[in-house]
Amino acid sequence: MAKQQTEVRDLQEGSYVMIDDTPCKINAYSTAKPGKHGSAKARVEAEGVFDGKKRSLSQPVDAKIWVPIIERKQGQVVSVDGDDMQVMDLETYETITMRVPDDIDVSPDENIEYLEMEEQRKIV
Amino acid sequence: MFPGATDDGEGSHTADDADRDGANFVVVGAPLDVSTTFQPGTRFGPRRIRSFAEPFDDYDHRTDQYFSELGVEDHGDIRAWDNAKEYLEYLEGTLRGVVWDDAVPLLLGGEHTVSLAGVRAVEPEAVVVLDAHLDLYEAYDGNELSHASVTRRILEEPAVEDVFVLGARTGSEAEWERARAPDVTVVPPEDVADWPLADRLDGRDVYLSVDIDAADPAYAPATGTREPFGLESRELRDVVRAVAPQASGFDVVEVNDRDEGQTAALAGKLVREFAFARADGR
Image 1 (cartoon, rainbow over the protein chains, first blue to last red):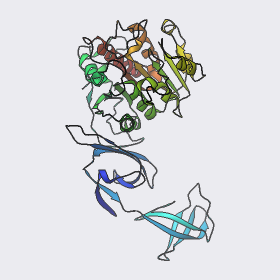
Image 2 (cartoon, rainbow over the protein chains, first blue to last red):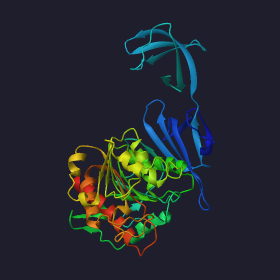
Image 3 (cartoon, each protein chain N blue to C red):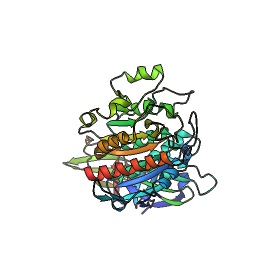
Image 4 (tube, one colour):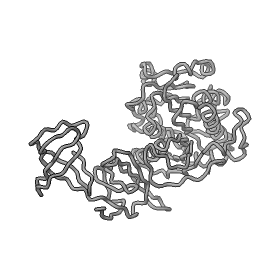
């Protein structure tokens, strides 16, 4: 899985993090102050990028954590067939099949933006 | 550790995917003590409540249950610092983790301000507040996160439709003015016992907040702003028993350390009554 390591303290709202081996987008990030004893802790609340499930974690701010490498790509809709559509990657010209999201109408020749991580994709 | 509870393991949590080993209740201490206006000391509340809950029997005769079998975990205290806004955000996240695990937070204050984090995490339709004070100041001494403004802030939460303040017997003129709005119902101490609370809460998701100063200072002297002519201990108990079966969150707040433990004992007993009644009523 494409990912890199960082420290919990470097996370921020809007960025991505791996929770339970799942790439998530951070909705809320808050830290507790350490006082004289113990270490500062951070709480992260996030939502699965591809499954939409809410997840949270609580870790010391200096703990190491994985951040998924998610690419934002441009594509062009080639054709739509029921729930599936053919999309051409505008950088590599490779054609891929993607599911049409329930809440989005697409038509051929339309340009779309999508997130890609390995074999998982999501239209922005 | 709250007597009869088990230790809570922290980690990652997934909504709708309980991983707290089936905990039904999670005790969270919130020793915030930054806006107390007369006698401070709420920072000692959580530890006092846990300590004075030690002599209570595990067995509850009324509901035929053991406290240690109710699935209560103690998360420990969320150490407080002097930035109430930041603290509430962190506390809210912790409590939301409890809610995601399908457990009921049992929040130990701390000043009443911490209830705002509880309400934000639970997102109830109705909030029942046992309190001597209206706590409806727009801001107290310029502080919108004062313990004297907490009910006002709770009313601003999008999910909250109604707030019922039981046992209130004092407030500023502006607070009483705000209390006349349809989203606030004030029940004075003398009417609490016979007030048809159940009818007003029927079928609704509720958060219950107990400011210990709702009790008469004779029963609860260890609190920052004592207000005579208050509720009897048994009246508090009966409200907690009535509301608990449909409450998704609970707190007891404003306990300080200025007595021989009678206030903390009452608070600890109300925590247990809440857990027994909720476990029995669902």
